[in-house]
Image 1 (cartoon, rainbow, N blue to C red):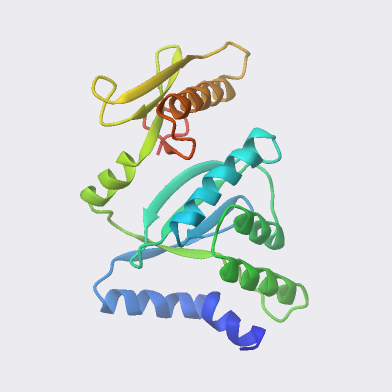
Image 2 (image 1 turned 60 degrees about the vertical axis):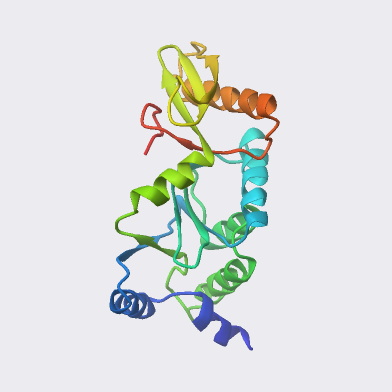
Length: 221
């Protein structure tokens, strides 16, 4: 299959997005498109190994301060893949996003085709942004609970950041870390909750434990 044919399979134009939405509605699926942009990364994690790669490489990128990344959304696709939305304050072009998404574990064929489309776009052949995921309009509570139970919640309780694995602070596994006063409230809370996560991973001997930001956290969903 030549690159042009691959693009039809793995990337989207405005016309093909509308076609996909029509097909989804006809199949009884309520979905909506989520678009990438210069501050938004979209990951399609299609295997357990990809999810481990994401967790490991996310920590590498953010711990070394190469880029600030915040996970804002996560859901299961109809095919069972994990879709992840990340935000960054840095401005990234199409090629940079494709490369970074591949580094973070996203489907390599999808990202290679996106990179190719970015190159073609620079010559005027293709102009649409190929980074699109389809999100359920209503996530079933049972699915949401199942996903959240597999991840630690990062939150804020008083002057402490915490990482919680379980339903609540009383019955779950939890670690706390005091918030330092450095004059940057947002960064202080992020560092404290991340430090609590590292403590929880160490105590439970689960270095690959995933996480999300709870409602008490400034980055909470």
